Image (cartoon, rainbow, N blue to C red; front, side, top):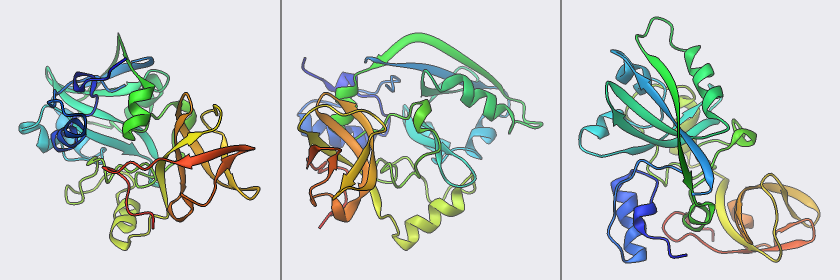
Length: 256
């Protein structure tokens, strides 16, 4: 089935334009984050909704004054990604697109950080889905419940996906994210591969029998995996299944 840019699920207009340009189709904003992966919307509303999310998320919500939606992540204090998706305006607040199996847990955890902030949370299941083939093809990570707090933003290429603001101020994990960014210390990245036969999310990626990475998302024989950048073309495998690096030109840094 042909994938058009009306199926795009991430809101950075610059990124959308870049991806759509490669497809030779116009960019069309959408609030769908994830077709076939179930997603739900977390509504964060109330008088302090902006201040609350601005202090929690990796991106700058002030961008929504001129953009339909943006990409962002929510990290633990140790700089590990709890949630990644789109943020967009809704009545009296903001909507966050989340994997369906994570939405309730995210709300429960965010509530712990509410303190005296005048914000309310609501999970809305409106039956939205997203095609995993599209996500893998374009390098968009899908963070389900088994992947929560497993990776840093840089491991997921969130800096390359325009999901991190380096000058918006503090948020959980900000010091770790900034240190990684400014020191250029990202040794592991999300890269795209093709496998000889299907593999599964969470499978270990190995080199000469030594585990060096992990499969992040899979669609058929195409997959995203978090691996050391310098080993991208070294002959990686999942068990006895060989992987072939299939670069993401618009996202991946130089792997040479």
